[in-house]
Amino acid sequence: MSIEKSEAVILKSFNWSESSRTVVFFTLNFGRLALVDKGGRSLKTKRGRLIPFSRMEITFYHSEKESRGYISDAELLEVFSMEKDGGLGRLAYSSAACELLLKLLPEEQPQKQLYHYLVSFLKHMEKDDKKYLPAVFIAFYLRLLSQLGYHPSLAYCASCGNDINNTTTGNQVFFDVRRGGIICTTCQKPTDDYISFPKETYKLLSALQTASLNEAATLPIGYQKAALLLEVLTKFIGNQTGDSMNLNSLAFIEKLKNGQQ
Ligand SMILES: [Zn+2]
Image (tube, rainbow, N blue to C red):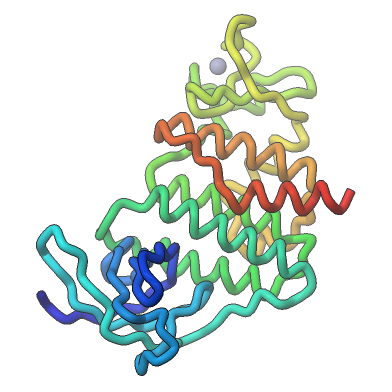
């Protein structure tokens, strides 16, 4: 085993005893990495604690073999507190982002750009006004999909490749989950299933696909629109990966909103 260091954010931990667990990190230098944390849950531990939604520098024994490496030390670099107004929503979106990464990141392949993108996303979740959180999350979701090679076709018809803006008549736009994008009026078949949404909502989704997080953080999106867009993306990626992608944290957001109405 070799000793290594990397900056990292926790994606998930799986407890397997009173004091020990396996922690899956998104590390800057190694990408998605699962490590054993022996005794790290114990209050007596002398090394730094592992804190969710924070940047840490972890030192660990890295195994080239099948067995997992393990953590030897952790130093906290920056904690993103989700305590500002709308804290439950902040936590839920941040958890959903980590869940998506846990499901989609390949094991031990560095994704430095995406790592830095996650860190700036968490900063936005900590600081932005709560009305901008859905747009920031959707922009993050779209970028994550594109970076990992799952790019939904929004500007061009997923069947014929023509520009959607020139080929779609009427006020509704149709998303074909199976083909992975928008279907123009000419290519639509009455026998196929589509998710339809108003043109205005489509324009928003399309804008968020190329928006920076700072740009997204100026767009207030109502709950219903956000829920529809998240449904489209989740069905899209579910079809692409063959995993239903039921994100616990998103189900939680839904409950939260239903309780408010
Ligand atoms: Zn077409």
